[in-house]
Length: 103
Image (cartoon, rainbow, N blue to C red):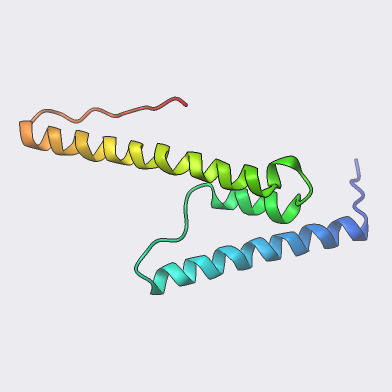
């Protein structure tokens, strides 16, 4: 089975990949020389949505920004929960338990 890809689709895919790579590279470089980490876990998926499918409903600004606004407190809460559990277990001398969140 031979897969045929037209030149326009290939050009669009390569250009979108390049833009995503450059965006992540710039943020990684800025966070390397700055005081704050600018890369977060779902950033790669957001780059794919924004650069490869800019017309898709999930790539629109309210959905992208709203998703990250929702993600930030959930991730911060999970990190805080893990840190508190680690401190509690160190203070009491009990064994650590792994925490599994299902969202």
